[in-house]
Image (tube, rainbow over all chains, first blue to last red; front, side, top):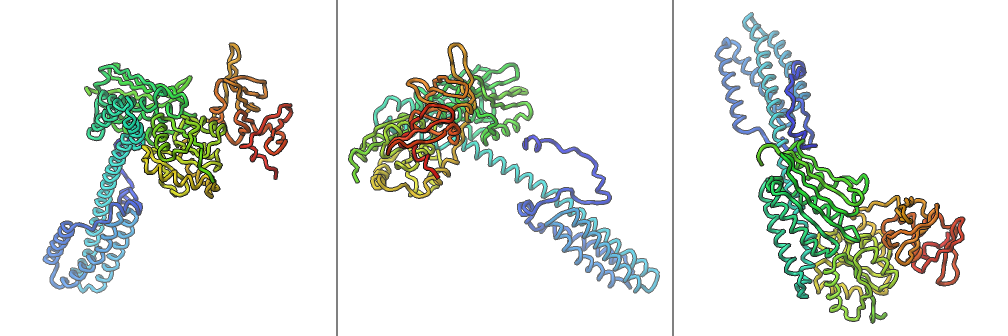
Length: 363
Length: 252
């Protein structure tokens, strides 16, 4: 669900509220700001702003009549000094509300400055300058603040999204690794193997072969984003063989996959996770044990992989485990709505898991 | 205190780890007599009732009843050592002194240490807070579905019996006799497996071969020091209560 929401493009509508209430829509939480907004403005940015302000100030000084240059200079210094903390505040916390409040207070300050200068003005030229200079500065500053806020909000938004994605990818990789390298599987298998080696039991050799076959077959699961179903089913076969040796006559299995289905490439680990699930929740809790049937078939562009067990079956209303939710998310990421993963009771006994994918294009 | 001829129970759903543990115990504790080796939790509890072993080695993940659930039923009457594979259960997170455990594949030296500790604990009272500890351990395991209906074949038909209507179950050689509000039936599921599926709050085990819906119990009658039976509401049967279950009835 999350993956689907993330990939859906946002509708591009005109946000009319920007006219009377300008600034970024998104409000960042304290946690988000702590994650993404702790960096100070870069030196390049500061230098660019300083040079621009200096050039504008120099031009203003050249244009202004000589009798008011001192006042103009003071006005610009005060104006810049007042704008600086506002800009910093918006840099670290770019919100629409703060932008509006700071802009309004800046404009009010400018109005006061204009009134004061006008009262001091001696002639009509000075009066014109007294009125216009504070307003021009105020206009420039508020536009700059608006630009800064929008830029910074957009930057934080992108940065947060990137951090989220990176975290999600790392989480998925960890879950995949955990799913494939379940330590209890390894140690349980080693427990049997150790005993059979010590006692010279004939099952030692096939157990060692299946276990090393499983480890070899699961290695590509970590290395490649896509894996042929045939390669994954090889890992499944070795896994089931290890379990069959461990469980003795409590487990039997059959794998039936068409050659066309084996050639299809899939995100790795999905089928193996479902088979592990069937063992864990179907066969393992059952006193008599059970049977696993894996079927894979390709009809046209539609791949169906079915894993059936005749174990105790899911209890009604059992919530999906983390593993299943993770598999669903990975399928949705790869195929969107073209893939379905269903797990249901399979009367009279047991459980069936079905992966159903419409594959577009070759591979 | 004597450690001669101490009896033991080993429960593991896989044959090889069971055999490995037995071999390690034979070396570390030659006088130990293993009286039962079983492959699931229901059999483990049944074997405990039958043999009353002095020590139990229980795998945690087993079909029917988990090792923790079996330990909860044993309730400190016998010391228990859990046997588990690394990663199977977060046993190691618990105070090592309170719960004894062995990791699979078992390390012979660890077995020697565990045996030394067990010998000292054979006649000691169970550790304090054992029940709390087992409840915490059990909380990490998944719950099973509780059946609401039983299916009993009677001639050509299959009768559905609501579990809530059952008065008591009694094992009857190869079958289990189900006495319910609408009559009687025989089912193939052994009593010890039913026990693992039923809600223990409602269905009380009174004997190795009797489970009763406690809503139907009228009274528990003590006959002599070791003998007790219960009478049922509106019925003439008397059901035996074996020694292990007599503490359920203590009067208030």
